Amino acid sequence: MIKVTNQITPETAVKKNNAQTPFSVAKGTPQNNPFSIEKGTPQQPTFEKKELGEFNSFEAQRVLNVCNICGYCNGFCDVFDAAQRRPALTTADLAHLAYLCHGCRNCLYACQYAPPHQFNINVPRTLTQMRQYSDALHVWPSALAGALRDSAHTALLLTGGAIALLLGLIWLLAPNTNASGFYRVVSLPVMIVLAVIPLSWSLLALTRSWRSYWHLTRPPTAVVTWRSLRLALQDVVLLRNLRGGGPGCNDVDERFSHLRRRLHQGLVIGVGLCFVATLTALFYHHALGWIAPYPIVSIPVLFGTSGGIGIVLTTSGLLWLKWHGDLTPTTRSAQNADVTILLVLMTVAVSGLALLIGRETAAMAILLALHLGGVSALFALLPYSKLVHVGYRMMALVIEQIERQSAHH
Ligand code: SF4
Ligand code: SF4
Image (cartoon, rainbow, N blue to C red):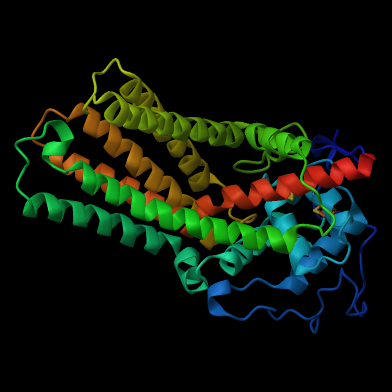
């Protein structure tokens, strides 16, 4: 049960910039006041390494200190209750809060101290900056923090490189006349190498990154239970923190909607269907000796096709929301990272569907190179793109569930 410390809902939110606020401050407010944004307040970034970005821990502490005193948004998501349990707001606390935030934006449009109010409270943007900082801090190896921060160029380089490599191999190597289907053009060992090498590297990097985050944010006394895992998984499936306490996100502007939450869920289902299709195809090949391509009415093709169509539709919808959405609650670089991974997913899905349609035509070799190159780049990008958030968010939700259970006992 969500603990709601006040009864205010997004619908009852007061107008922005109410001049009669309890936190109105006059000039000359002491510099250590969390509401003070006067000149001289420590505003310099705490973290100066270029690849870690411009995250300002003083500013994040100021913003969340105001929220801890205000308490107005406590029913919107898990962030505000969790912040009140962490009044010190250390770097570990901020990293945890950053991933509890799902960016629903409710607290920006409901906040009477949001810009242009002088308090300049913008929680979604502040926590987005913290996520970017935390991602770069935990990336493995640390030398690749720049690759994560500039995921658009990284994605372009990896996708372009993988496709060019495949096209080069197809051009250099004569078709294998003893093989059939796709294996005439690209042999199975080459396909396996192009998948296994990037995937193995990425799984190692993700394990190192996620473990580092877990050690930083996990409270020392926290014990993971099956119940906390089950409830956290339920939060992931339902995207509870994208419901804004019930009425939905502010997807594009101040209006409420569940569109982004549903598109996100649809995208996960689409990726899941493609994953099942791939596993089934591997089983057919290695266990049953059935060689691809498979008939239209077969599990790999039916699941792959429906998953691919699902990915195209949901990524298109999410890109539309990005295109039309207000940039105030986020940062330009975070927006670029989101758009980048959506475009990579869309490329993989479109090339897969095109390969299905054109597998008996002369264009098959090029379509195969596009699809396999896209898949290989997607695997390599897992730790160096927005996709890294999957593990961080799951851990934040598990910690939240552990803390809720201990609060109830
Ligand atoms: S975002 Fe604004 S309204 Fe919400 S808790 Fe913080 S200060 Fe209060
Ligand atoms: S943007 Fe949404 S999820 Fe993030 S802190 Fe605000 S209300 Fe919570």
